[in-house]
Structure formats: structure tokens, C-alpha cells
Length: 43
Length: 520
Image (tube, rainbow over all chains, first blue to last red; front, side, top):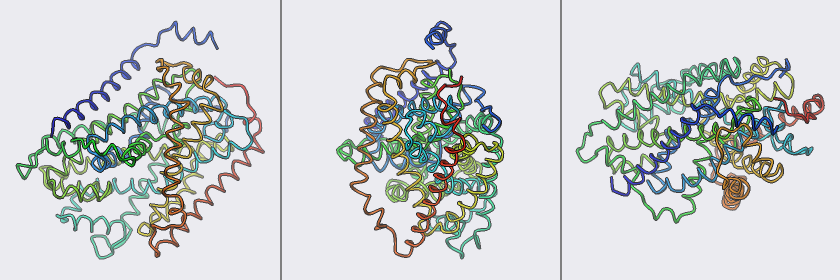
């Protein structure tokens, strides 16, 4: 594989893995109660 | 909603896995790598990611938001949802595309899905082991499909048996409903799919090549080495946009239906992004690591051009079995490969069935189980032409209208409706209601301007280049034209049937259609 190929592979894998880690982190972190109340208040 | 109570997903993970399961299909492991090889290798990932950011993710958010919004008014399919967004007497009929498209895809996809189940069994018991080269393996496939009576199979009997099993599995899951059927299946099938994909990716990356020059690194290079000059070609950008459409299951109508079973306060922003990112993990990282590097290691660079040109089906049902025949424990790995495709297929096909079942339930007041039974009988009959006239262009015709044209058309309508008619201010606020993340403000402008423009360009280019040729069947062989014409008559009949059902619902269930208060 050429250096260009490695760059494309590593960058795209890193971007997708980072997005997945971000989503998993957010999914398994408790939603701040204050924000829920605030939203409900707006409703 | 015959009994007045709509089902709800029991967990956030359940709905994300269900939407990801709908998105992750055969295309993730077959279509994406073939598209990449044909369109600039590693350079393809640039237009692909651009399309993901400007088209895929915004459409995900739009569909999750419209789905939850429509669900709050008691609607689980596009006609009712479009009516909730815009109280116009005609708009609901455009929403029919969101039920018509999934039905059309379902009636051929289930048959293709059944091949993967059959091949998983064949691999484990060694049925295709005597086919040791490409010609023999292609002959085995044709014989299985009933296109060559002189081959291994004397007729369509075995293929039909596997179709019946696959069809029954789909109907059984849909019959059990959202939580006990779809959510239950996706909660175990999706982790199993990822485990199998990782096992296969590791196996491919540790393969010992028969020719010392055909290394794993060069196999990955065949897929990832960039040809940046390809980016000057508009067709590469359109191919990338098309791939994003197919892979994320946007523009079909299934995400709308799934999201309609959310509660009003459930998050859609993070859930939509999570479903998209799970799909990308399966497609780019796992899908990009299995078929092309494996084919390169065993067939070398000279044969790869022909293999890539042969398309995704050939790669899956001809090339991959040959590869697994040549490695230790190949029967097991081959079986796992086809089991992976079957799991990817079944989690997608059940989602294709749900809009029609939900339409019967919510808009016509039929009970959930009766609706599933009606769907099973009707689609079983509709599946027959795709099975018996496979070699006569029926499947391609169904795929074109249901799986290509309707997707772009439907996505264009819903995007304009969401960003312009419903209004971007309300749309943005609805998207953020109960959201677990704050979406960057730039997406407000992307959803309003860029995504619809992107879709209109795709639709416009297609209309300019292909429309007349498609309508006049210029690329269809003369012998196939009666079958293609028959398929079109069938498609029109489905559409008319749905329109009549919608008209009946509109007349008989005004209380549901005129609801103005969103339910919790």
C-alpha cells in the first residue's frame, strides 16, 4: 500500500472511530437533569 | 393503533440498534468496497465523507425528527407525517412513496436474502465444494437460481424452500411487533453481526497469500490507494452520494416509521447520529477490510479488475466461496460469511415490512396481528415474479424503482417539506427537543439549503441523463421487455392500491387525521 493509501485508511478509520466513541460516550452518560427540566419548562 | 395504544421502544439502545440494523445490509459488505474500487480507490472516501456530512447525517436527523413528530399525532408512516407537517389535502399522497418504496424493495430483497441463508447452509455442509473455479461457481449460482437446469440443482425447489424459510422468519418477527419482534431481534442480531464481521476481518488480515507478491498490504492498497484524478469526474461524486443513500436507509421511509414509536421526549439528535456512525463502522472499517483484500490475496491484481466489474453479487456468491474453499476451516468461515450477510439482510428486511404494517394498523385501524397477516399474504404473492422471472429483468426493474428512484424522490420531498414548509425554525427546535447533544448551528443552513440542493442536483442529473432511456426501456433486451412492462403494471397496481387505502383512511378516520395536539 502506498503512503497515500495509508493516509486515507488511517484518517477515515480514525474519523469514524472517533464519531463512534463520541456517540457511545454520550449515550452512556447520564443526561443532565437541569436540561431536561429546562426543556420541560419551555414546553 | 386499533386498541388505541401505540407501542413504544423499551430502550434507547434498542431503537438505535434497530435503525442501525435497518441501515446495515448487504450493501455495507458488498456494494461499498466495489464502489470504492471502481471510483478512485482511497480517493472515493473524500466524496463519500462529504456526502455523509451534507446528505446522510442531515437526512438521518430529518427522518428521526419527522418520525417522532408524526408519531406524536398517532401516525407511523409518511402520509400522516407529511399531513402533520403541512395541512394540505394532497401532500399525504406524496407520502405514499414512503410505504410503496419499502414494499417494492421487500419483495425482491427477501429473495436475495434467502440466498445468503442457503449459501450459509451449503458452506457448512460442503454443497458447493465441487465447484473449484469461477466458471463452475457461477454455474452453481445460476443452477440454484433456476437459470440453468443442467447444473447442480434440477429446478427452483431448493431456492424456493429457503425463500419460504426466510419469508416466514421475516413475517414472524413483524407479527410479534416492535418490542417483542424487531427490538428483540436487533438486540441480539446486531452484536452477533459485529462479532462475526470482526472474526472475518481478522481472518482476512492474517491470511497467507498463495503468491508472495499478493500480500494483505497490497490487497488493502488495491482498495485504499487513492487516485485523486477520479475526483474530477462528476460520476464519482454521484456514486458516493448514491452509496450514502443506500447505506443509511434514508429516503425509504423506514426510519420515519421506527422513530414514530419513540416517546415525545426521547432524543433524536444523538440517536440519529449514533445509528449513522454504527453503520459507517460496519461499512468503511469492516466492509472495507473483508472482500476486496481477500479477493486480491487469492486472485491477484490481474483478475481483480474483472472481479470488481462483475459486481457485488458475483463477489459475494462466486468469488468469496472460492476463497473460503482455499483456506483452513473454510467451511466454517464461509458459513460465517453468509450468516453475516443473512443477519445484515434480515435486520433490514423486517424494517422494510414495518411501514406497510404500521399503515394498516394506524391509518386503517386493523389490529397489529391482522395487519401483519395481510402484509404477509399480499407480499408473498408479489414476491413470485421476482423469483420465477429472475432472469428476465424483473429484479432489476424492482430495484430501480423501489431501491433507487423512489429514495431520491422521497428524500427530496421530505427535506423541502421539513426545512421550508414546516420551517427551519420549528424544524430546528423540534430536532433539539429532548436532545442529548447540541447540533452545530451550521447544520441549520445545511438542512435548509445544502441538503435539498444536493438532492435536486442528483435528481436533475438523473432526469437529464437517464429518464427517457429508462421509460422507453432502451437498455432492456427485446425478450425482456414484456416482463419489465408487466413489472411496471404491477408497481402501478401497488401504488393505486395504496392510494385507495389512504383515501378510505382519510374518509373513515378523520379523528386521527385532524388531530392537532401532539401526544406525549
